[in-house]
Image 1 (cartoon, rainbow, N blue to C red):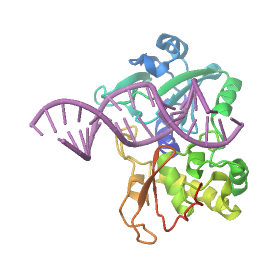
Image 2: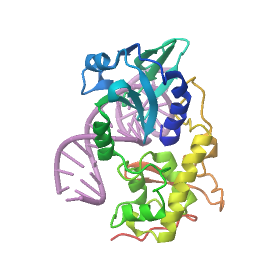
Image 3: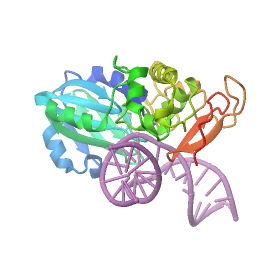
Length: 277
DNA sequence: AGGTCGGCCTGGCAGC
DNA sequence: TGCTGCCAGGCCGACC
């Protein structure tokens, strides 16, 4: 699943090809991609616009076009961006023609989206309603995490996955960060000791940085701009390793369900939550 | 208002 | 072998 490190990897690869150039043409094959906007409305607004910067916020690509127009792309589950593929890729939903280059948004499950936001102020409101602090923001630390989680009784993992709290964490990096911080995913979010908020904040930053360093995790559909794979899947400590030995204590890794999401942990290294009822 | 759950979607795979 | 049906999950909206 594309999470912060995967989106950041693609952003870094794509930025040199698009910044300072122009969207000459955009073709939307799947009207769902732009919904609720009519595809033609998006095409008309974007066509011919200069691209000032390609930014990222949470898991969103933010194409900063001239006149404060923002084209936001989200890969959701299975979306990929492919630059200059030899032929039109399978599941192509959108084609963007740039100066001398062709970009495809491919997406088998069709969850991926593109939307327009007009004006920097509107963009700030859009993100404020959906996204919390960036994990690499200097304000993000154990104290902030503790404050955000205060009084919250839902599982800490669900809290980490809620983009309104912290932006960019998905199922992979939540499991890996909780393992590194020795925190059980079912612990009520507000119930950690101060020391563990600090450990967890640090683990989140480290695991995301490692993910970026490995150019993302290619477990399912995620691929680089040129179709190559990331390598972070080879560095998973617990995610998708049910039954394999814990890299710390050697006991088998468990799989449970938290908030409807498959969740991997070491029951020995991540202390058991207090029982409810 | 926090928390939970269903819907979106379809490739892949378990189970018969 | 071939078919059925269920699972995966980011995000949103409905509901309690």
